[in-house]
Length: 112
Length: 112
Image (cartoon, rainbow over all chains, first blue to last red; front, top):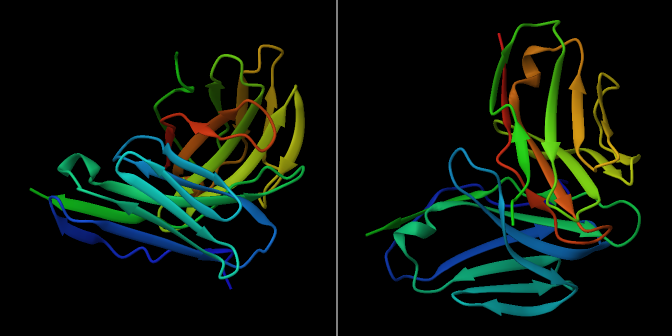
């Protein structure tokens, strides 16, 4: 079983729709959860950073963490063509490890 | 504030050669990380340096090595290059342990 699972299937939505992305994980030691956005030929850009369970909202973006189900989500409201990118979930454990474990990424296309 | 900068942006090498990649972290960041993003494999953790010391290493052979300098910049060295080393090599930096990691745009390495 992979440490972090993210369905890599491409996702196409019309402009203004809600984009819903999710990841599952197997390592119960993970306490920090992140979402990164990566445009073509660029490095990942940190979008959301949360610790433990709960919700976090930042503008049009909402991140949810459910540690009991080992499930995290990212919602993008009022999606724009500029949101077209690959979205990567990442997570790490507390302690001296500091290694980020990534999902494979979801390619999102927002159609004008 | 300048982000993480990496050089060079592209490199073409042949099998058996050696390569050195460079990274300058965000000002004030003491931790530097290296990740490999190969096609179809997602981002894989390579190395973590903090205060000049190697703190953690991913599941890569010893021909992948690096160092961190007193100004916190870092180098990644790869010896005896193999075809499967073709990938985007990403550097990230953070303020310290368990802090958000911010990425550069990477060095794309192609092995012929």
